[in-house]
Image (cartoon, rainbow, N blue to C red; front, side, top):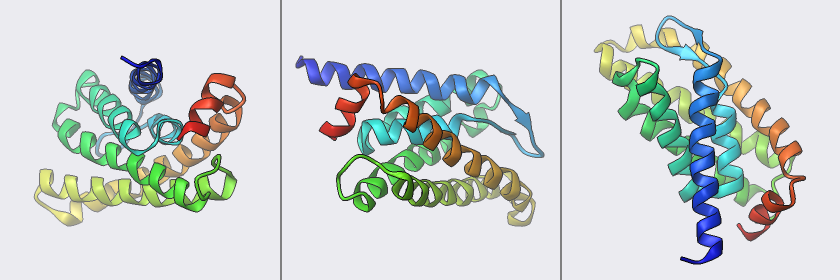
Length: 174
């Protein structure tokens, strides 16, 4: 296996674990589920890993947090929703920043779009679970707040971690 591929797989596994832990460590119960800091790590992983590996890291890591936290009924939805949060964030930040290192504007716009998907995705999933679209509306405010926190956390952490030479090299390789 090529060294670069091994490094990318290792970083993917690291971001899976980080998104799981960030989701589980600080849990704020809401009417349906809980709010957490995991979205920040999902977006951060997307910015460092790109769309495919970011999708794997964000989706699998967040799904594992649901399973380990007793919310297994959310796991299938979370795998898809959080995976697509990472994919959307990675694709959009690359387009907005024209392939260069993500900047404030790019991360803000890409993160906002990705988190809007998260809010809509969980509303749809909860509508399916509850069988009632109106009841699922109760989660929109808490998911929206979680999304805002996720964008801010990802931007702050990106600013710090992009100074690490190995991670900066990963960003520049795409």
